[in-house]
Image (tube, rainbow, N blue to C red; front, side, top):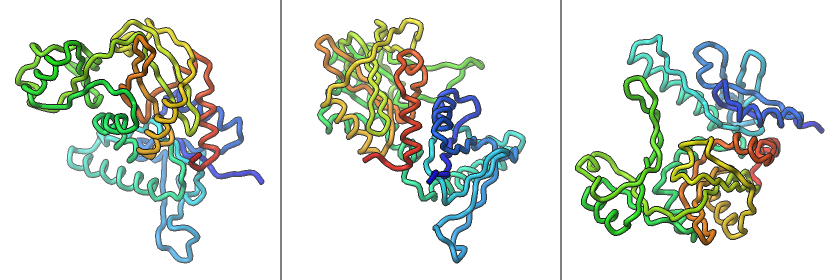
Length: 323
């Protein structure tokens, strides 16, 4: 019997990575309903959800409707939460816009959270918890991974003592956020730092300082369910994201112990997928850097030919946690 339950794909309009996954879902005959929360004010998306309307076969009933697709809430197979954009209601005044945005988040997200589907890739609430770098570091230590000495502090004295003890160290943001100066978009990278550079401004907010790994390459590992895809990235850069044109890629086998630890990390946070960054030292030992719960991977499939999009499609089509 054909399974006609749809997969919800929730993301921005021009998401080529989501397009890759949807192509594979289409090839498998899996119905897809794609939308972006920002479609709601333009009437491109309507939601209706009923609760306690007896007799009811499920706790929540209703539907999502786009101009071309309809999904019954009680029939959703899986949810692929990629990179949605929430409406800003810029045509409204400040207070009305804030009010309307809050209603969309509570209403739309609330209905999604009420769905009786065990498969989210990934649930946004779990993404949010897993995105905290200090929480990631503690989990990595518990799992026995090699973690560079790291300090999170807003105490300038503590920062100087740490940087004095670790002669070669870096600093990086605890969380990436959109940032503009004079209308120009800026970003931040992992950067070298010394004790002499620490001043009173450190007291304004917590900063992350970390002993620098004497690395020869980086390792990006995408885990999808119980499948892992490991890519070695050679660049000579402290932060390889600075210059993609300087990168070279090679597919590598992941040691069983490391793969097991990364699976356990995702299990701890309740995630179905995640992208891990590690640094490889001169002995080939991987050093934990971070987990991106919703990291980009499309360019890695293009560069290596690894079947990453197909793995996502398999997981979503399955509609249940792989265990």
